Length: 208
Image 1 (tube, rainbow, N blue to C red):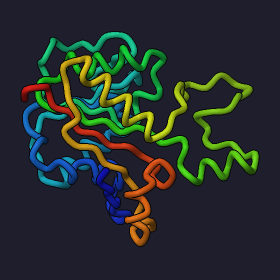
Image 2: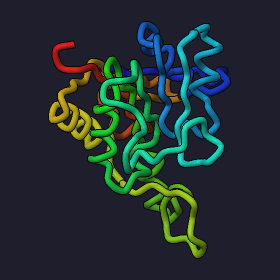
Image 3: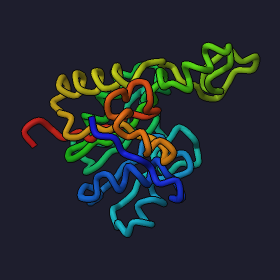
Image 4: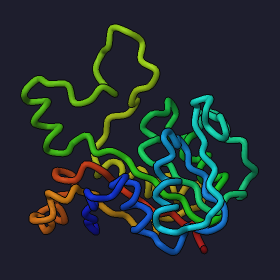
């Protein structure tokens, strides 16, 4: 698997890295699922892309208010590019959510997923420390949290198999790492499940 080192000087390192990884796809309509602070819109603008951006989120301030866990308010194959950057792990039914991405997109799907088996998380487990506010058992009911705990290897297998079932294929996949890890790039290439915190995949329709 290819390893991509993120530029920590970028305004939004991970999202900027995703945009730069696939420079030829950002055309037409780009629907950003789980847009939150609209980092993808900012990254696209900084790179000079003029695609039509639509932000989708459960937050009522989003451009389109919708829940990926139910049904997106778009027609079949109506979107050129759809992104779900660190989103699928928040859904109750990840299989349905994935199929919704495949239903709506016609050109490309870009996905990132967290690797919960990355070495720093393993060390926190060994020390008895919480790994993130998205897990654990909080006293107050949280507005959002991760529903799924999986490794990079599992994410890779899931995306490949479920893409195929929905008529899509993985055109490119990468292990994302911060700039401090660049010196051990070869080690990351060999052990991405241990050293990379994020899995990135670009999907295209089968036959496309």
